[in-house]
Image (cartoon, rainbow, N blue to C red; front, side):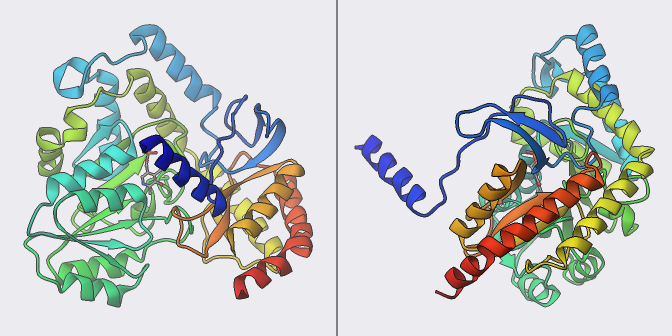
Length: 400
Ligand SMILES: *Cc1c(COP(=O)(O)O)cnc(C)c1O
């Protein structure tokens, strides 16, 4: 009976062009990858990863990982509060606090756990959480499971946020992505801060896609806008994107961090990250702090991409970040273009609902410092061809 229902749900997914198939990587992450699975064999230029600075396979980061694993083994062996909290985690936390200009930082196993932890610890019944409509799923899940009144405001809309915050609540927290993961635009943090202050609300910023990439030293959107701990009391960053490793952190006041250590269930009841991952992340941090050149290279590729695509029929989004989505609308047309690119040796993210709102299926193209200008030009040339072949078709299905 359950089996039958599951089969029906899967068939329905396929019917809606929403069925996902995993690609199987047979190389390191990078600008050039190879896949090994029946449907997707071969070598590709990769415009689908979040490895924005090309650090996932950087020799210095790999070496830090291997050296640490040789010294400390692989498993952390326990949760942080038992006996799994290693010196490598501890040093990484101190370096992150300094890097972000916060009193303290706390390392988590991943961003999902960090976000769930913050929202569940800080919010409960009688409280109010205001979230941007396009926030990452982990922020939405954290808000929903917190027990607080959960409201989403219109994307980056200060009037809508102000209205939301006028609802009653004991504690009020505003939650937003720094750089939006599927759109690539940034939250208007200065205005959000003013509005939050007017309602005596705290602000939580998840800068998963800005951390490492934005700001003079790569400390993210808060560094770029020069926002202090008082202005952004809860700052989240992840290591799985520009840092090229794995894990996440929360930075904030001494009180916030101690509260999380004492009360955050995903933190307390989960095995600590392998120390070697923390060691590798410390090495990434060093590269990022001196990575102005990598960030400049990424910026010039972003500009190249945007200049060339602006001559095509696609609509660019308001994004100056490495995330450059092209919204196609209808799922099947988007998949057709993604397939066309793949047949020509290029991988892009094919993003469909429920990851993005219905009717906004998109190619999520991500640029990295590891790409060459020639690779970006090959991509835009193929997009021009795809436009000729598929764009009118997409427009027709949009008006149906
Ligand atoms: C990727 C991402 C996360 C989740 O981080 P993981 O470490 O991959 O679990 C959280 N928030 C945002 C905005 C993200 O893009």
